[in-house]
Image (tube, rainbow, N blue to C red; front, side, top):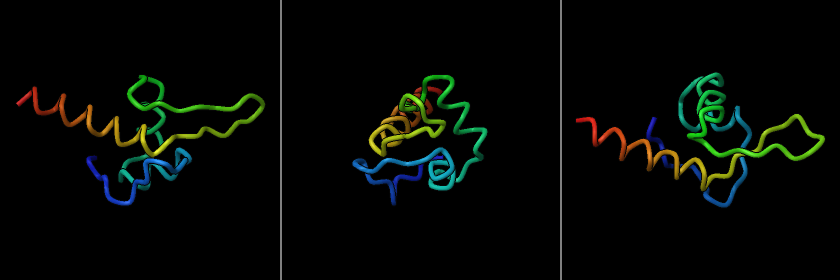
Length: 71
């Protein structure tokens, strides 16, 4: 899941775009958001969820650190 290329820290992505960028399913992205591993926001009155590129990169960094500690 550690795909950093193409992720702009200043951009805002949808859940679908994040799934495509990371090469995972939409349900995986939803699970990452629900578990608090991936920060996302939903503006009041909107159904759409927004995810900052910086949040994706931070999640990837945290995931890599955690995986390295399990080896």
